[in-house]
Amino acid sequence: MEKPRPKQSRNRWSFCRLFIAAVLSAVLCCTAASAALIRVGVAVDKPAVTFKGSARIKDARGRSVSVSGTFTVQAHNGSVRIKGKNYASPVTLSSRQPLVCDGRPYEGDFRLTARGGRVTAVNSLDVEKYLRGVLGFEVNPKWHLEVLKAQAVISRTFALKQLGRHNSAGFDVCPTDHCQIYRGTAVSNTRTDTAISQTRGQVVTYGGKLAQTYFCSDSGGATADVRDVWGGSIPYLTVRREPFPSQSPKSNWQTVLTEAEIRKALTRKGLSVGTVRSVSIVKRDSAGRAVSLKFTGTSGSSVMSSAAFRTLVGTKNVPSTFFDFSPLSSAPSSRRSAPQTRNSYSAKTEYDTTPLTPEQDALLESLIHQKRFSAADRVDMLMYPERRMHYLKKALGQNAENTAPQLSSAPPRPSLSAAGSGTGKLEGGKLTLYGRGWGHGIGLSQWGAKAMAENGWSAVQILQFYFPGTKIQKR
Image (cartoon, rainbow, N blue to C red; front, top):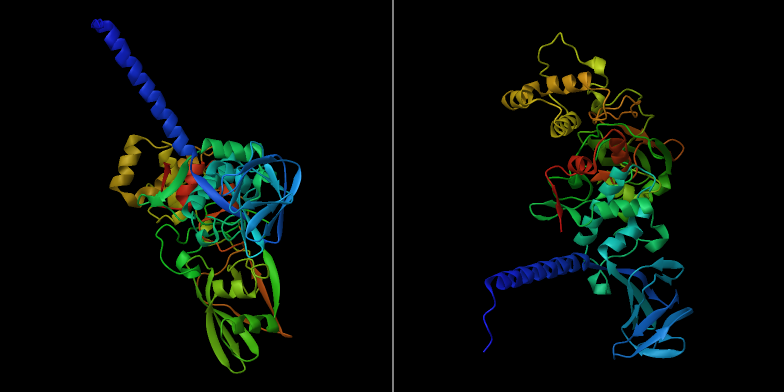
């Protein structure tokens, strides 16, 4: 019969078991966290796909062989044909090194399927590795790290939100801007890798669920409400006036549309007004962006949303819906009404009760978050919300020399009137549009985020501005 262990030995053994269990639990958690896979259809229904590298082939019948060098994958009688040999579809290509598929290197495995004489190659990899092939293309790696981190979080959120979007085709997402542009390791960069690593697992949530983290290149100074572009209502995708001016390749643009191009767009929508004579903006949002347009012609008139018109006439022709029919005014826009320098604070007025604009309110919240106010000041703001402008001016006036977020004194962009409507008459069969911004305008503006980061805002502050009411959580 075994002798009872001394009490000290039993305690040591219990401790060891608890330690081992904790280690195993941590390992399992890490494994689970890194096991979030995404399937990208990098080559869909093609006559042939070319690979380069060393890989292990495993087909649907369990056959496993090695292959190396450059080889072409084709479909043959329902099978996947590689180097003259047929393999039961689907076939998995696995490699420890990136495989080059049609000229681009990709991490992860490939799933090859044959159907109807054509082959589809799906890249399957960890979401964190997938982001390496997204960020390097979607955002400039040379930009401020806080912008890259914000992009990493929204791209991760967007990817996880889109899982299964193309499930009927055998993959989750495509590599185009329909989902997110994905280019494999060809666009990976040490700075974007750092942003991905520092935000690992972080996503944007609303009500405990993944948020819709849309983004565009340049909002033109104010984001668009999703209901005005795609319809529906999402509380955190509304008009947000940016607190800092920014300069992008499309800060100001001009385009000329012909009568034929406009008429063709109307026809594609099932509308007809005869020969188009004029186009009017009949509705703008609170920031001045065109929401709906009226087309008048020789046989009547019709109304269409500006977002639909932009799509039908071509987004390259009309970069954004922030436009008018005459050169934009150089007067400062309403989003620039906040104090800009330390001299803007006047001690003559004990309390400035001017209501804050949305961007001013966001700036004040960021200053509060950075503990720029005393406890007494914070209590006073809670008790007397009408005094918030007073405290914003006070903070900017007394602390203008530090690195906290401040309103930039850079020249503003030309403004668009938020009131009234503009009308453009076709002259010589042509219509000229003058605008600003680039993209649909919903969610985060990359150039706007760049300006925020350069003025001291963190990635979290940037995300909270563009997606108000959301949370940053780790999954």
